[in-house]
Image 1: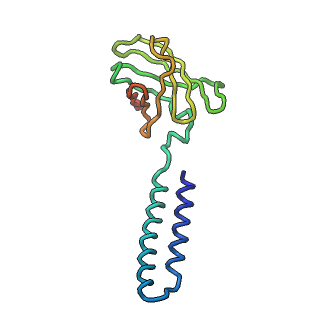
Image 2 (image 1 turned 90 degrees about the vertical axis):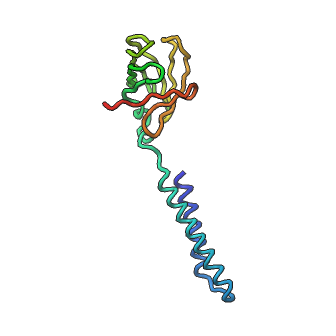
Image 3 (image 1 turned 60 degrees about the vertical axis):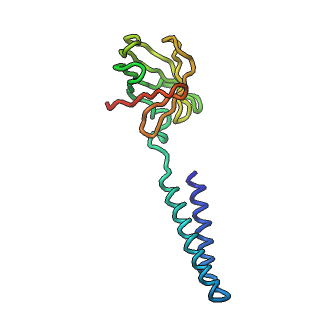
Length: 161
């Protein structure tokens, strides 16, 4: 995405330079050409600023490791914790097997283990069937490092360790 913004910025700047350095045919067109050059220069600068501010979150560059950590579930099971860990040597392409060690919250077992798969660097699919839930519950990692579940809108905030 940054490459596209950089290319657009470069094209805008080249166009602005061509407008700014062409010789006018009469005085009135000189004013219009300079005005267009200024407007397009501002547009190119805006595109460049947008492209530099739309960087991916730090978690995205970490891959599946971005999910590793301890989370809470204050909406559905207050007081409980969920710790996500990656399973060694269980990675194929973009898929990394993981497990969630959890429990201790209101309305849930004291401890349990849930299988999961992390796809890419932003999505986790958890099998809640050991707890009587769905086997394919998808969540995404947000920019703050929390997990938001798509099906019900629940959020697991990351706990500071």
